[in-house]
Structure formats: C-alpha cells, structure tokens
Amino acid sequence: MVTRMKILIIEDDLEAAAYLAKAFREAGIVSDHASDGESGLFMASENSYDVLVIDRMLPRRDGLSVISELRRKGIHTPVLILSALGQVDDRVTGLRAGGDDYLPKPYSFSELLARIEVLGRRKGAPEQDMVYRVGDLELDRLSHTVRRQGKEIVLQPREFRLLEYLMKNSGQVVTRTMLLENVWDYHFDPQTNVIDVHVSRLRSKIEKDFDGPLLRTVRGAGYMIKEEGAH
Image 1 (cartoon, rainbow, N blue to C red):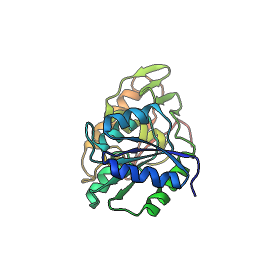
Image 2 (image 1 turned 180 degrees about the horizontal axis):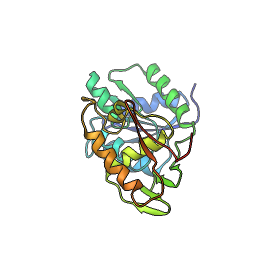
Image 3 (image 1 turned 135 degrees about the horizontal axis):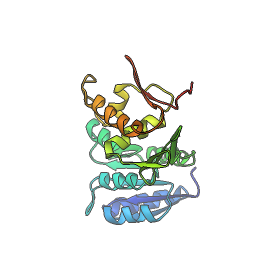
Image 4 (image 1 turned 90 degrees about the vertical axis):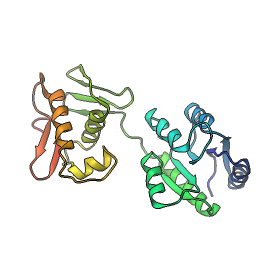
C-alpha cells in the first residue's frame, strides 16, 4: 500500500477526476486536481508532487504540451499519461513528449496504482547531474549554458542537445543510431549526413581557439567525448 504520496491529477472530466481522488484517498494517497492544462502546468510548476497523472486531451493546453513545458523547465516529476488514445503510435508520442508511463482508458485502478507505486519509487532515485563536465568543458542543464576555460560558447538548441547527450555518456562510444533516437527523437537511415554536419559544427565551437581536442570520431562506431589523455 502506498502511503504519504502526493499526486496531481490533471483531468477535465470531473467525474473521472472525482473517482480517482476517492480511490487514491482510500489507498492512502493525497491528491490535488486541475481541470485544464494551464492550471495543471501552474500547479505542477509551483508545488512538489510525487507523481503527475495527466490526461492527453485537455482544454486550454493539451497534456503533451504540459509535459513538454515541464521538462523544458527542468521539472522531472514522474508522469503517468491516461488517455483514450491507446494505439502504439499514441503511446510512443506520449513517452517521447516526456511521459514516464502511459495507460490507455479504460483501465483497472489496481494496475494504475501499481504503476504509480513504481513511478513514486523512481522519484526517490538520485536525480541526474545538473552540470556535466569533461576536462575544462562545462555544460549547465539548468541555465542551458556551455563554457570552456570559463568562456561561454553559444550553441543552437540541437547542438546543445547533442553535446548534452555526448557529455552524459562521456568516455563511451555513442553510435549514430543512439544519437538519432535520443537527440533527434526519430528513426531514419543512419547513413544520412545530418549527424556529421552537426558534429562538425559542434566540434568547431567547443575546440576552436581552445587547448586540446575533446570530441573524437571513432571510425566505424560513432563518436566519443572525453578529456584529452583520459583512458
């Protein structure tokens, strides 16, 4: 039984929301309710919750937009999406928007509760580092800034995501497929040169006028970022 958890329900169907609130209360869970996307975004941004339960189709701001905006703000509260849109493509879209789990309607409350328990435990896990460092290169995920040797480097959004993923996996080979799936969020021919173009631009920005290379091409495998001389 889950106890002392606090959940935000973002659901415009008042009857469905009341049912969830009652069921959560009986399970020992405290819940708040927002009936539209804008209110839900505000409440999720201003308060601390263990899990957010979000419907996709909401007035004023749709559920996926709420999730994307929370993630953009650096709020990583676990999200369970509840939706009548239950096809595989719908679930994939929801997860890629930043959702942690997706449960199609109609659903069993016992299954919902079990999934919430899992997400609640995940919230207690250590958060990802807000700052990544490789040698004298530093990326701050919160302020969205990159510096090397104390000098700020201006990156385009895609370049920032690319560097963030590389630094998160520093010292490891990152394949082209991994970059396509985690930086571009879609699948297509890995032979495309879009990755090469972005890596080349990024390499120029983080290495030109600085001492020592950091971003390496691993022939036949992918790319790796690591401090010069590191093993």
